[in-house]
Length: 244
Ligand code: URA
Image (cartoon, helix red, strand yellow):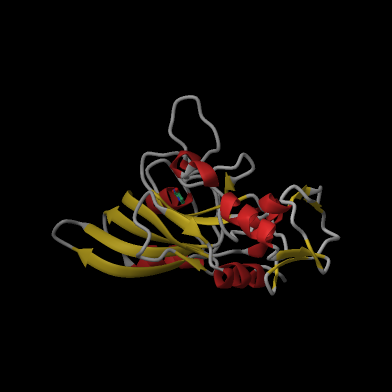
């Protein structure tokens, strides 16, 4: 870690606003390597041990945000014409190194992880890790037992690509309207994968929402377009799940 100012170090670790922190530093509440430090400008490196009162504050520059992506925005960091998921972040959260982990189509809603942790993103997206992605899907068309069997064995897409086995749970079927709702769980991330899997069964996806990615679950408290930081527990569970 390059040296960063003590007040920024503590603000980055959410110990308060920059001005509260400066006041506390001047009051003598903060120590560096066991010695009270009164200067907010003091440069801190990874060698230093910073204590805020009795609490040791270690530095983790990584950010993890769980967003409920709304329809109508694209999963990119920049675009000349379209609104991106990053535009939904508050200015203080919108650091230039953040990016979305994987892609959702413009009309797809739901769980999207935004981070600046390249290693985690790489591992989560690695085909070798088989991280499960669960989608709530509304279909024009109904699924037959045979169709579900094809999804479960690994369906052949129209272009000849064979998908890995998926899980498909039918939530509801309306035979008069010829529609159904399912939860489809896949372990890959091919382009338009869910839509293409359903098209191979001659059905059309009318609504798509990602509800889970690995151990991360989209909770009801996040309405479309809102986001929050991952809890420590969610972070730990996610890291643990992709370790091996
Ligand atoms: N599959 C799709 O077809 N679209 C998405 O956005 C995600 C998965």
